[in-house]
Image 1 (cartoon, rainbow, N blue to C red):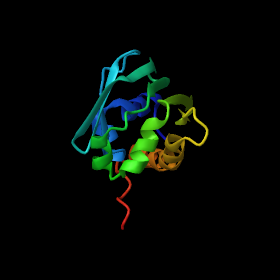
Image 2: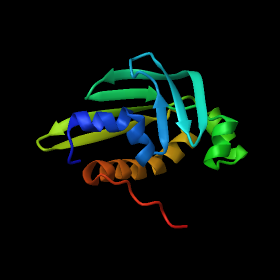
Image 3: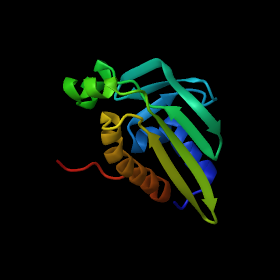
Image 4: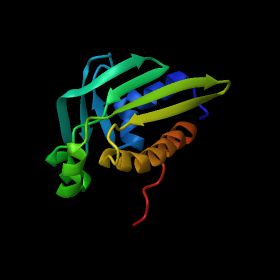
Length: 150
C-alpha cells in the first residue's frame, strides 16, 4: 500500500477510519489485555473474552475476534442457523503485521480460526480480501470503495 506504517496503524485503530471502509468502530485503548467493544450499525457487542492480545504501534496488532450475539446477527443480516454455527466455533483471533517497504507498506493479515470446517474461517476467508481492498483504496485515494449495486 502507498502509505506509512503510522497511517496504516491509524486506519486499523481509529474509529473514524474503520467506519469508512469496514462499517465497524472499536471502543478500546489498544493496550494488550484491554477489552474491545465492537460497534456496527448501532449494535454494540461486548464480551470479557473480546480483547487486544498484542499492540506494538505501528508494527503489530492482534485481537480476539468478536462475539456472535443475536443482536449482531440481526443487525448484520445473518440468519440464526449461521449465527449458531459461528458461535459454536472456538474464539478466533486476527493479527495485522505492518512492514515498511520504502515508500510503501506491506500489510499481512492472519486470521486464526482453529476448528477444521470452521464457520468463522469460511466467513472471514471471503471477507478479508474485500476489507483489505477497501482499506487500501481509502488510504491511497482518500475515498472508500463505492457500495456494491444490488
